Image 1 (cartoon, rainbow, N blue to C red):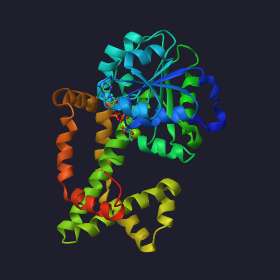
Image 2: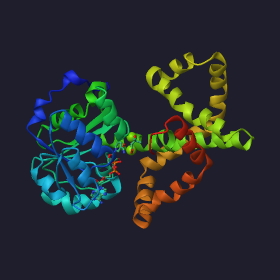
Image 3: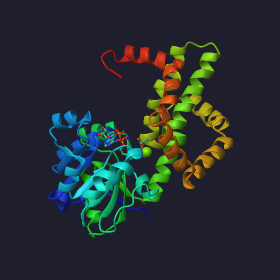
Image 4: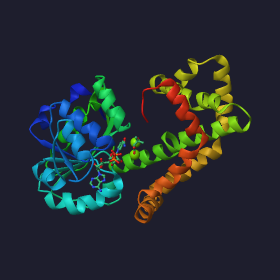
Length: 332
Ligand SMILES: NC(=O)c1ccc[n+]([C@@H]2O[C@H](COP(=O)([O-])OP(=O)(O)OC[C@H]3O[C@@H](n4cnc5c(N)ncnc54)[C@H](O)[C@@H]3O)[C@@H](O)[C@H]2O)c1
Ligand SMILES: CC(C)(O)[C@@H](O)C(=O)O
Ligand SMILES: [Mg+2]
Ligand SMILES: [Mg+2]
């Protein structure tokens, strides 16, 4: 049976006396460090000295140290830097400052699952992986709720690894929504699958194909934008809150019949076959190898070369104008 925890199941006092070093102050680091601090936990932030995040973390009221200093002072070292730099930063700055009984903590299992990092036997290795982007981790916490997380212990040297894991989950606000037990293997394989075929890759490709189909058929791009991109969130919000059937019950009968019959026609068995192929490439390490070698060869250009094409796409130029119309004061 799936194991879950809510707020009342976890006692934050168990890690109140421990120092948590959040390494990195980007999308997750920023959100998580602030949630943990606002939950009354003892947080320090470990950063590259010349990095642009240093000032920002200080302005947010954190004690900021170099990564080696933060690791020396910490009981729990929570690694929130980009996946592709974790191996090198661990080797040079974190590993040499580990001591027996400390915990290495992650929000994603890849570095451990794929052996990018080989940690010693006398530390805890734990994971609290929020199921949402960093901005939402902070936003939902500030609204008094939280982002659900999945949690795992890979190595329990101190026999207190679960207390540490659940304490972090509670500090992040995740137990307010609910926390589920997983393994490092399950987290990395499902996380990569979701972001590749559904959440990021799948939804972006679906939206762009639908937009192109309407525009190529002669419809106004602005109308196409609102139809296939803007409204998607409103429908997905219903799926998130009420489930797939609940969404269908909340749209018109015409949308319900059209969606029920045309959805499976477009997203047919051949799409599922391709999803299975993508999953296989994750499970057998093909994607891991490809991502590492592309990053080693091209660095940030591994994705920038694709991002440039998307940024130049009509859906983006039209979208910028539409978003300016809806939210004139917001910056992107
Ligand atoms: N982005 C998300 O919403 C999200 C969601 C769930 C899990 N995760 C996981 O959280 C972890 C952090 O991801 P992220 O997207 O927040 O990272 P990010 O790209 O936002 O991290 C950037 C930060 O990392 C630090 N950094 C960057 N390069 C560095 C280097 N060479 N040496 C030292 N520090 C460096 C800097 O502080 C910088 O601000 C990853 O394991 C990721 O898989 C991310
Ligand atoms: C937010 C996501 C996509 O769920 C996360 O897994 C990431 O890697 O950014
Ligand atoms: Mg991910
Ligand atoms: Mg994810």
